[in-house]
Image: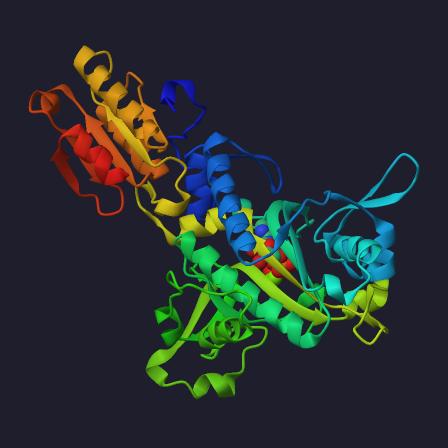
Length: 439
Ligand code: ATP
Ligand code: MG
Ligand code: MG
Ligand code: MG
């Protein structure tokens, strides 16, 4: 992309309404625009990151054997009356009446709808196990929408639902989700720690939240510092293996890590004092096993191997895709701007032309741009007629992992400058070598 043809409305000043750094940087980098309280447009740069996260989530869900689909944002109140949640959900649910006077709602989550789809089409245990998911906009009329996309009212969420014959099978699905989530967050360059949590309005017994440690997080958390040493890495996991998934679940949840809702002071005190940590975290996902809560209420049964109808065991599993954009920035920035992890960066690198209009510099930038794109990379070429300082500040703000700086002086010696956003280190090298380094 050439910057002169792009739409990236960067702000010079710090927007007054932003209380936390991720919100401030997303506004300043021209990633989002608020349209109403907690409702945002995703401008091109923000949209690119959102799509990258969405793709990672899809890839990891499909790798785990889960099946993508898409349900609507609008739902009929009738299904929620069946589960009893139409009244129970409270004012966070945005209720809408259509022209036929039917009660509708903008879905805050999809347990009812997916259970209805399941009961309409699945009648035998032979069709199990089944995990369906979608990534779709949700609406919750939050009391205090704030911190930009971190607590929006309209937000983008992956929600998946498993259907299993037995509790045992459903717990395998739970563990499989835990494993796939560990992989997902690590690919985004994040450490998200599974912590024992409270199930809230979804209901159920077993639940873990995934938390990214950050001072600006809204959750209070207590943990054994040894959990932060755990990494999933690139282990090869067989998602069908009950033992493997359970092993990973145990490894990542045996150490003490809980949110304030389930915090147990006596257990916490038993951790060696130097490893006790009290901190704040951002909830970027949650997994639940809730047994037959919805299948009982809504009659989602299959014929078991014994021929008898039996209610399916279910769980639901959410990832806050739009919140993650903010969470990644909270975890990765400096005083100049965002520092995108490689896996989620909106562009792979920036090309800064120090002397736009200089025939040689323009030609060298064009050549770099072409060869990067030929390798399947996505460069952002700052081809504006601006001062170098302004161009550097913009690149630092939007946080691409690499910057290639091209100017007449370097070109005389056959070199450009390659700068790492993270380390700030700059090295001169021939253009081809810079391309190789980035690829
Ligand atoms: P919170 O405790 O932050 O209100 P939640 O527990 O109500 O979140 P879940 O029902 O568990 O949310 O939804 C799954 C994920 O969706 C959450 O882990 C979070 O990452 C994301 N999410 C929930 N509410 C919002 C929101 N208002 N804005 C952005 N993301 C959200
Ligand atoms: Mg909530
Ligand atoms: Mg929560
Ligand atoms: Mg939650």
